[in-house]
Length: 428
Image (cartoon, rainbow, N blue to C red; front, side, top):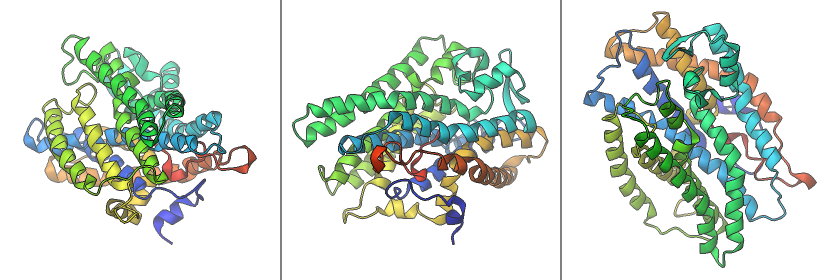
């Protein structure tokens, strides 16, 4: 039995999982880990090659967060669209919210408490300064626990640093049933499959507009925010870390979901040339956007360039999930189905939460080495420790919570909204 099979031991809730999704999660989580190892683990101060061309590949690995948002848009919007075409499957919105809470909160709460009180490597605000240590203030700890920390300048980014993206995800979870309702309302007025596809794409277009206006507001409503403007204790940071400024990153994943459902229904057939054309678009757009963002010290919060990165991420997602020309699993998906990639993808949520506090703990205890060779060693040590912790929290916390999820709708029929499989649960 493979490691991934031993790790999960959870039967699918409905249907088959989408090939390649766990591999994409593994890519997203690993790239973010490497980026943070590069940025935080140098004991001599600034990151290696900071400001030079050598920093661009590492700064670009922060795009793993953008990929997570695109995956969430795809994975969570898709079941609502499937339900829209199967009238006998009435979606349970209450079940959907319950499942979302079970998916993200138990592991997050446990890791937050361990990081804040045991490792004491949480991010803490002391006035405007941000440092690592024990997060013991009851008010701050509760704000972080309920993902409200980024709504006030005085508490932005406290606790587990990457959890700011979870706060954005939660707003997306709340908005998604309304967005899906809009798609359904428009689809009922459609006269043909083309009209239904456009109706399905309308919420994605709305999300794109929301995100771009939020980015423009963050960039232009505040005086010279600068590259570090998304980390300071200011209202600019609050806007940057908000759903308003990040909504566009979900939009392209939602668009892929709309097309994927129509392809699966047989209502849409993609032309044979779409894959090379998609690659021809993604490569130059990704390179240009990455270079521009690197010139801005990797700040992803408010530059419109990150919208282009989300497009590239969604193109990569489409190349994986769309069927091959022969109608089977794509070559990209088969490559991402390697057992190690699947296993890493399964624990990617815990890995996303654990890795940055572990970097801080190693650095604060003088357990990191300098130089290029030190960076390789630091990253390897971080990877081993963070993955080991992630396997433990996945097995002891995430899986028991997943087993509590509602898997069937009234009458015994599978509910495509609440019964998304364990491997189709999106995370930031």
